[in-house]
Length: 613
Image (cartoon, rainbow, N blue to C red; front, side, top):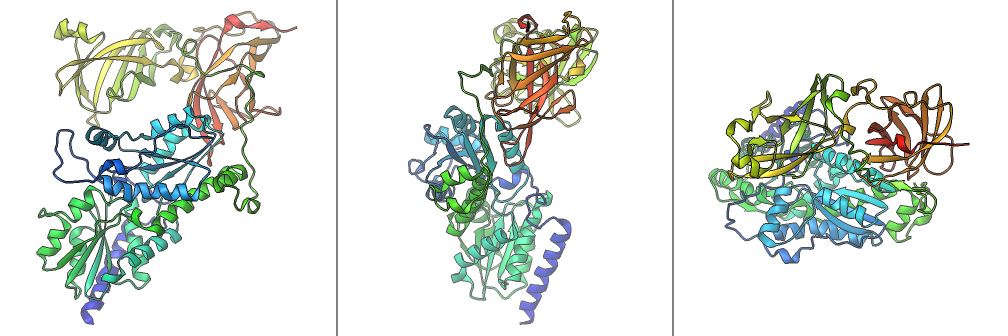
């Protein structure tokens, strides 16, 4: 009895220390953040490594990547796993629960790990969409209402990254919402703890320690493990202990607590939605550094339960509840569609219609490759350094950030790369690079953060620039095409008089029309063209009418403009500081459950200005 009391005191002290380290353990979406590693269910083998284990039959799993989706889609987003059987029993089972709960919605899959997607495709020939591909599929299939339900354990960096990626598509749908991750509310913690206890009840005989292994993170969100320990202990489950692979409580911490008790057996089970590589190897593997080996080495009989949380019905229903809350947030119309009309009379939410005008009523333009692509030279930009967006023809040539430097009309760009796979770049084709002298190659430099950077000349913005990149691994030149986007520069970056204005064009006071085109966002939004324009005292103001009613304000050069008092789609009266060059603007959409500002650029063509009588 004294030894059992010692175990409880040790666990309490451990819990208190962890709670002090991570004070934000309430489980609320706003309080818990995590590192991107937190949702890594497994570490994939390198491309050239061979698996020496059987992961199951991939053909039994449905990748849910079909078209003909319909107007309502529920996209289930997971980190992913290459363990075929476990993918079907966890992620697949969660998706199946969604299909049963939402018969009027099309359930689709998206993975965030490109490494896993590529590995499964290479090994099994099974294609799984990444999040961007899944969102593009939804847009191309004409989805109007989109709900994204992540299978993440908690709300953190990866969840926020997902929200940011989805926000870039907010203007492509009439309504979009994101469900909460598994451990969000106090009720979620209690429900998951109860499910775990019920699933392991047969082992809880007083002489068995039941150890739950989470991933862990150095981020503040690691406090969720302390919270789960507290929920278990407070409910009287004194033989349950929570540890992590990557953080605290560590294996040594948990082993010490178990040793303080009167246990002869240890049951190991992952506290992860998916039981992938960590569960199979770090927990249940035979290597000397696995949790199984550590507890066996300490003299315990060890039972390994390699089952992800997603295999539990109670956990799957929690995800369904979170998805239902997201569906409900879209409004009554979406909720009725999701439930097949059931309980429709119990909701009283206002639907968010797009108010999109028909093709016969207005001409909408979203593709502005010709207009926004008009070349901009250095003599049109003030001297200075500017963060600029760069389009690359290859995702393998990943430019994380870029600084454009302008001096005396000359432009150079410092490109910070997302990897270290290229040794040189050459401003031209790969064929030209192979025959050119090495003195024409541009080598990488290492910045203060250890990232590789290349400094390259830029002849013009909005112009396709040939750039060959030399692969360190393949020792081969690869052709790339870069476009440094002028529409990503602030309006005050351009030199005075660089582009025509209402005054320089000699426009008299009066009413006009002008053709306007839109770029940015998802590429699916549009604006009415030609637009109505008034000129007074050399200042031009134009009425921008959007293709939906979901915008509640616009910003031009940092100034916020409220909607014009008109019925139908969102409309704003904004200034036109210049013509014939992209004008960066921001528009806030309420299509998502939380408003989001989206970056756009408007192009006003001075050659199309027509006076109105």
